[in-house]
Length: 215
Image (cartoon, rainbow, N blue to C red; front, side, top):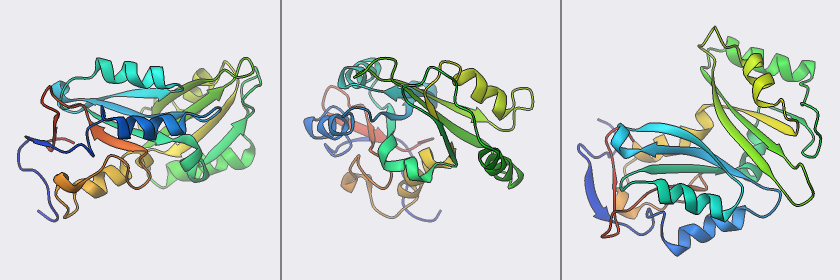
């Protein structure tokens, strides 16, 4: 096996990966200045790495997500303003109640992406129904699902208006996977790395974290 990786899950103390520390909470708080949003995946330790899509618009929502977490859960967040330049497409207006409409160039970009054999899109919708308020939706669109084509998913998710971004699905996992297969041991890792706003773990009562296995 190339690089370094746990052969089995082991618990250890590393405050850099502990998502409940004040330092990591401040990282998330700093990115939640209006109108920015953060989005990503909550991967459930007890579910063998099964993931739920999460969209966070306030520190209260972040605290609530962590409160639902169990020791060992892995949470990966991206900040929209830090990654929006990597979007395949962007359409709409944050304050508009009308569904965003992709241009011909946008559609061609997505069709070329699919033709290249890519399997997944990340869909992000941001909507400000009233001044100073923000809503966000984040979902995966599986391009292998012939019964639910990407344009149908886009229409369903964006029906409430606002603006949307579509990203390569690998964006969420890219730097996580690079770190996992690298040579640095996790005792030296921090939650903030690469394009990840945070990529860390819910600790147990002793403040220990665990990574490895399907993560």
